[in-house]
Length: 189
Image 1 (cartoon, rainbow, N blue to C red):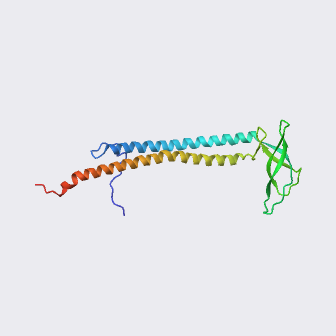
Image 2 (image 1 turned 180 degrees about the vertical axis):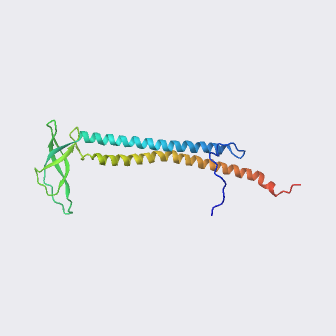
Image 3 (image 1 turned 120 degrees about the horizontal axis):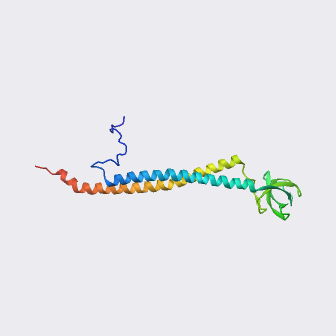
């Protein structure tokens, strides 16, 4: 069973009250500002990061192209049983220039075997771009992480400020107790 605390009074820190200290009102404004910045900053940063990642991945899907490359060497079968190994491949770019690089291919493939690789605008090898649904999941995860990270900064800052205010209030209580505590032991009259 919990102790009776009385009716809950909303916005008590802003109400006129002879027991309300300036630090109570200051703390109320700090809490309000911290929550507003935490929520707004987290949401806005998360949405901005999500849209940025989605745009970047959409640009990759639009710009990166599959190219047929030929193995320049045999893809040796590995003792570890790996299904794919790195080998040198050669391909011709859209401008007719010859390119070479490393790509993962099936183990045991022979020289001259055609494989599909992905290239960017400059003809450099890149990974296969993610699908639209994969991009949405990736963008959402990045957005959540960025939003939480950004929201944590004002939240932690507010907690630090409130902790300092609490220490200051406790020091004021100690000081007041030092002044008035000894008076309680005296007899009046």
